[in-house]
Length: 134
Image (cartoon, helix red, strand yellow):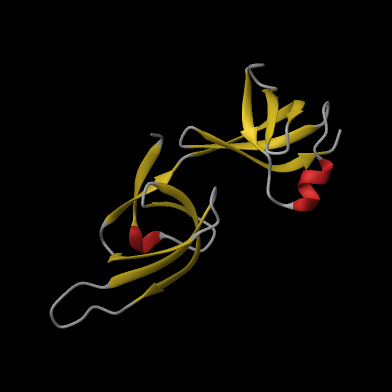
């Protein structure tokens, strides 16, 4: 797993975090003040990158949480397999792999063989994020 520990108190909206072994994008962060009997707490609301499920995490502000390492690269679409899989080739090392078809209907309509897309690799999984202009 390609993750790194980060302080829960340093997270901001838009950063990435692992909640329940699922990579997520942070939507909102609420910090509570230090109380009489304990440390400050952080309430993190995040959206899953692959399943679009909302998750909430409450941890002490000084604790460590896992943050996934996101690798972004350009790839060329080789084939559309069925309605839910796309075969793509990494333009850096020319390796081929299959990625799930994006759920966004606008993005789905733009994916065609020969086109270029931006792919994110997160924790060994791939996701097509957008198309690239040629």
